[in-house]
Image 1 (cartoon, rainbow, N blue to C red):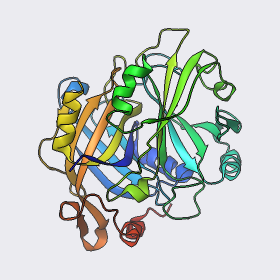
Image 2 (cartoon, rainbow, N blue to C red):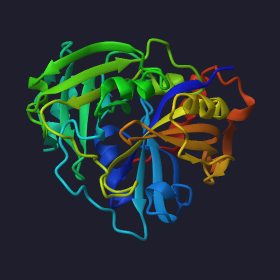
Image 3 (cartoon, helix red, strand yellow):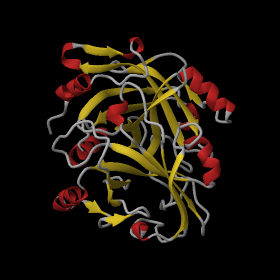
Length: 353
């Protein structure tokens, strides 16, 4: 059986205060269901944490309407570092997270009513898709995008969860060895070069860039594929300046988007495929990790410019923690989506404010 990619499981976000950040993401993006909330030691990320284990507190939260989650991540014995320069469009790494909405005007008006840091008005990408940019309290940019299909359920929140990223790369063809050949974003929506009006209000948005929007031609499979939905990756290569690495002189877990994580089945096959294509695992939990509320096998690769891509093969998740109900995914057909009712029961653990 081939490796199954179910979708974007989560975007990792390094913050100075995990609960303060989670409150903001609940209010603005509806990320109100905790999958886990754990303090522990990050003992395997040594290549990215100064060569020694670092204590941390993390919350993985989702929006039941659909999309991936946020892994909200805070150092507990170290002060997280902000970028050492002003990050601009085209700098190398994960720069912007895409958040989907059914109603772009309703979402914009909602954020305006909250006096949110709206970075742009509603604008259109080269294909005419409407979107706007908003900034969180930690200087992270989010692109709220109109997305009419691939929703799990309908609730009152104005957005779903993340459904993609904008990633700065130095060479798009080289980057596609990861994003297209390994991750399955094999279909080009547009590939265009210039200075773009819809980027005008974001830092670096007036530089000349090549932008390539990719989607997956094959529908995702697996237990959570219906929840995660369809996703896109937009690669940006700046043409008229030399880009910097977003995490230059900083640790994984410091301020910003620390990784892009995919839910998969078939970690051994993924390890072999990545190695054959020149992208060896840089971190590999090798055996099941256990965070009390979730368990599985995780690994990391780097894209050609060092952006971190995480793979998680989930073995156990909490369905209803109050009564100790956990779902063992190792006993299920990995190609089949979980029943909708089973995923919906996770709402019973939702945070109420």
